[in-house]
Length: 170
Image 1 (spheres, one colour):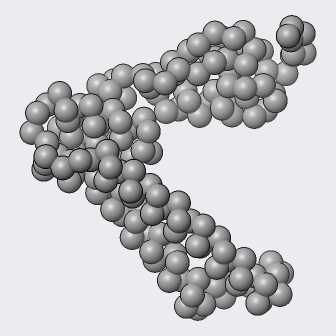
Image 2 (cartoon, rainbow, N blue to C red):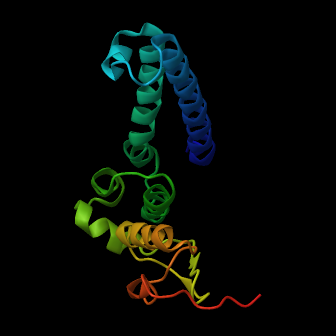
């Protein structure tokens, strides 16, 4: 069996480097073209910029292909479930791919099968640790926090958005 943890780590490092290279090339493109006022579509004919975009897309395609590769390599159902959970919660994978390759189920069953995130969040208002059961709940917790200026907000504190924040005692 392959060392999938190191493979995933290496792909994430490559993706990070490709993102940095793409950002540098985009900055160069803007400088050469006179800033954002020029047509952004012109970057599609800029070979250096498009090369970095192609590399980034290739790395992201490799990352999206991980569920299929892991499913071919790992036969143990418990390990396949563990990798499904890891990819779903930590690697931003699509539930369709995880369901199809690792769990043999439909995409709407994936959140139920992998369970809540292994990492809890601390509510910025009431200071309790909570485990959002789905990605949508994670997003809602962070969006609510963004609107209020607090850290993440649990589902009990989210309806209180817009009210005066409590006095925070240090």
